[in-house]
Length: 194
Image (cartoon, rainbow, N blue to C red):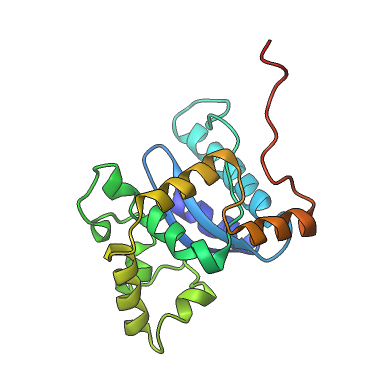
């Protein structure tokens, strides 16, 4: 049901999902919105529809989520595949499976094994991996399982997402700050620690 709600919400909010994993207690999505506010709109639709469904099904009321969703702007040229890899290997890192192809609630099967998944929209950089679908999937598998794995990059992805930071080169961060008027670092929440 959650997959179905995300699928509908992403289409209604005009958001392309390039990678995802639905875990037992959280979700990772790599999303490209077609318009400003698209991601927030998509998450709002998901929240409304899924919470209503869940509450009806389990005869409960109230909120379901612990807090607000977390997000990070990423420099696609530098970090797209690192983010996709990070997302799709989440069940392996969590010890839920030894290989991402064995976890059904992820985009890995679409991106690496060519299994159709209506939720997944290939990113332009993914399409450029090879001249044909078989070649793209093979190259993508090499990216996910190859020597390109870097714990430091995984740490950057995790910290950017959890902290609401911009993930990219200094030039990319500066461009985002100037073009969108966003702060280079997230604002602290709450008042003085005193």
